[in-house]
Length: 404
Image 1 (tube, one colour):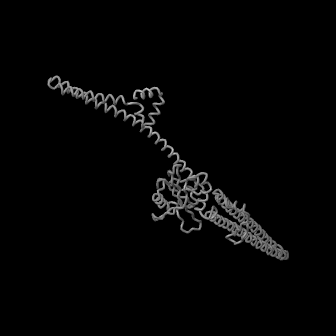
Image 2 (image 1 turned 60 degrees about the vertical axis):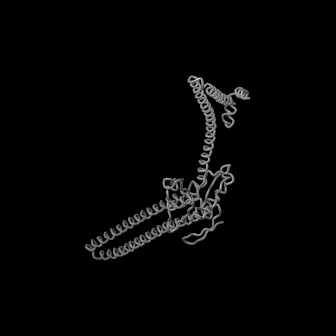
Image 3 (image 1 turned 90 degrees about the vertical axis):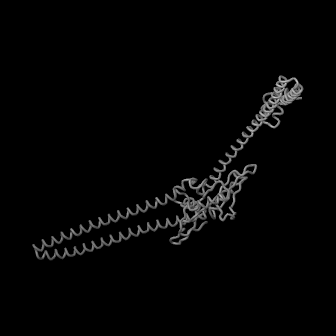
């Protein structure tokens, strides 16, 4: 059982756990807030209209009664005058009766006026009771709201967020780190840091969290924007990719109550959320970053394949370049030798030696070309080796046989 004390009359009463939880849930619900306010406003307007209508009815009824009695008095006075003019004795009797009747009517008028005053006082008392009830409801709502903002979801907003994360840590974030920012070396610190890692231990997402809570009775009301600059500073100094402000400030703001608020136009990769979006926001950013990691891995594989192909092409170009260089050398020497033969017989021996040198260079170039095989070209290129093997083993085998 829970004991609740009325803040207005200090009267204590108790409710069971289910009733207490239902009260907390209703107070926490924004629709309940609106419904309470609307109902109080409707009740106030209805009572006000009832009072005005009752006052008008009473005034009209009293006025009609007074007018009626005054008319009767006037008629009696007129009758008295008429009787006095006709018969003295009858006049005296009529005057006596009229005076008595007038006294009775005056008493009736006083009674009606007293009833009117009492009715007005009763209506005023009822109206004050309605206003008092409204004030008590508002005060009770504020007290319950205060309990909700500071204790209803845990001892504090930080404890609430930490408990929510720990509930699903092992299942949803087995490799993640989530804890208090204890590093004060930079002169400031946030509340919590979240980091998640791949199976290889590589960090792929990180978030700096700041939690802000404020009761209704706080004299100096803070705004969410007051904490963004410091949060961005903490994010950068602690090497986090994202920054998130979990806040109960500006509780009546339609902007912050509508969902996740992106403020990256003010500070990069920064968001403002209510506590109910704490876990969904972590999940959203983690999943987006994980897809980026997968895309990077696929890109690395493609780049590695391109490097293998490039290496293969470079090997072919190197062989061709060497062959062309040796051929050019041989051709130049051969031409020189022909010229030497044409110029003078006496240089025949020199030309012969040049020819022999050319032959050796050609043989070397030819040997290098013959030595070029698929096996050697694909020795350091697993991708090209796999592609040649996919074409069939007959060509590879024949190349290897020739090489032997």
